[in-house]
Image (cartoon, rainbow over all chains, first blue to last red; front, side, top):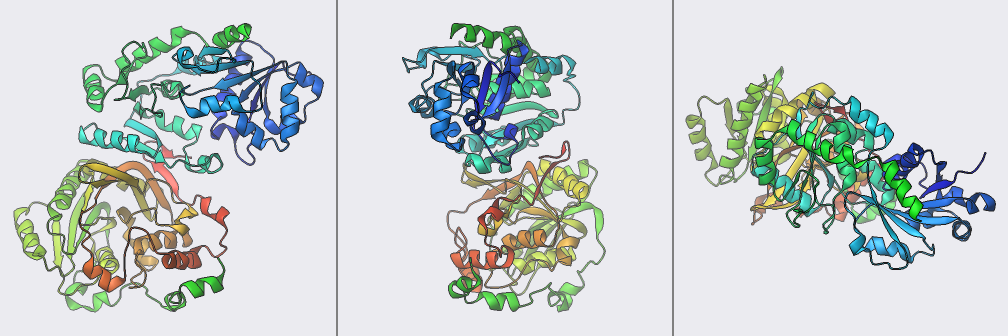
Length: 309
Length: 306
C-alpha cells in the first residue's frame, strides 16, 4: 500500500475510542479536511509511527497533535523521534489559545516543527511568539460531511431543552449556571459539568461526542463561558452546536468582542436573555449559519496553509 | 485494602456488618405512626418530603419551593403532596408548622410532629412508609427545590424504572456558589467518597424493599451507603443533568445533637468510614474498580445518554 502523503499523528490511547478523548476531534477533523481536497492522508498513532518504514516517513508530511502525549504514548521514544525527524515536513496542529502555557511548551519538545497550523475562527498571529516556527491561521470551516448535514438539517423542530451547559466543573461555569437560574432564564436547561481529569479517565466521565450531539439536537441554545482565561473563541463548540441545530452562544464577561464578526457572543446572561426575547431562536440560528457557511470549507483553508509551508 | 488492615483501623466494622438494621418495623409499632402507614401508594405523582430538626428558620424557603413544585407537577399532569416530619425539634418548629398548615389549607400539606427524636435515616424510612405516593423527593429542611424541574425528574424515574434519580445541586453559601453536587453518573468512585447527596427522588417501594436507609449510629452517611446498596442490589441509579435544587450551607453548623447521637459528621467521611464502605462494597480494593460507571445518564427529551 502506498504511504499517504500526509499523516495526522495522534497520541496512542489503548482500549478507548479515540474519537472520545482529548485530541480526537482535531485529528479526525484534519483528516476529513485533507480528504476533502483529495490529499492522500491517513491517521497514525504515535506507536504506529515507530513501525513505519524510513522511506514511508521521509515522503510524508506529518501533522502532529499533542507532541508530548505522542512521545509519551509511543512506546519507544527514540524510535518515534528518529522517524519524525526524517519526515519531509513536521507541522504542529493546534486548537486553543496561543497564550496558554501549553501552546509554547509544545515547541520545547524534541521535535523541530516547520510550521504551526492554528485552527480557529480568529487569527492569533499577533500573539504567536515562537519566532523560529512560522504560524499559519486555518479557519475552522465545514468539512464536506458537515456541509451535507447542515444542508439537510431542519433546525426548528423538537427543541424541548431550552439551553445546554456542558464543560468543566469550575467556578466560571458555576457562576454562569447560577446566573441562568437567577435571571429566570428557563431553569430546565441541560447542565453537565464534569471534573477536570487526566486524559485516561476523562472519557469515562465526559459526554461522548455522540451523546453531546444527541443533547444538542433537542436544545435551543448551546451556552458556554470562556474555557480559558484569555480572549479566545471555542470554534468547535460553535460547529457542534450548528450541526445539531442549536444556537452557539458564548457568555464572556471578561473580554470585549466588539471587533469580531462572530455572532451571539454576550457579556452577560442578561444580554443573552434580552437577545433571545428580541430575536428568538430562528433568527439567532440563522445569523450563526450566515456567519459560518460563507467562510468556506476547512479543506480550502488547509490547502492554502499547506502551500505556504 | 486487606481485611486485616480494615480490622485494625476500624474495629467497629465487623459488628456493623453483623448487625441487621433492616427496615423500620419498630417505627410502626408506635400506634400514632402505624395509623399513618400506607401499604398501597399512588403512582401518578410525588411526595415531597421535608424532614425537620431545629431548622425553623430554613423551613419557609424549603416549603415555599415545595409548594411551587406541587404547582408545576400539577401543570405537568401529576399529583403531589408535601410531607413534613418534625423530629422532636426544640426550636419552636412545631408551632411554626401548625401555622403553616392552617395558612395553606388549599395545599396538600401533611405535617407529622414526633414526640421523640428518631434521627434522619429513620425519619426518611418513616416518610417512605407513610407517603401517599410511590415516588418521594427527599429534601433537607435547608434545601430548596428548583420547582420547575421536578416534573422532569418524576418523568425520568417513571420512564427508566430507576430506584433513585439525582440531579445537579447548586451548593451555595449566601449568594456565592461554592460547588456543584450530585453532578455525575454514579461510578465506583463512590466507594472512596460520597458523591451523591441525599437530595434525590426515590422510588419508596424499591428502597423499602432493600431495607431502607441504614439506621446505625456508627454509620454517619446513610445516604452514601444507600446509593452503594442500591447498586449492589442491581437497582438503577440515574443522573438527570438538570438542576434539582439548591443546597444552602449554613454559616454555623447546627449539628450538636446529631454529633452526640451519631458521631462526628465532618465535611468528608473519616478514614474509618471509607474503610467500612470499601469493606462492604469494594472488597477487591482495586483502584481500576473505581472508574467503572454503574449509574446512568438520562433526560426525558433525549433518552439515555452515553
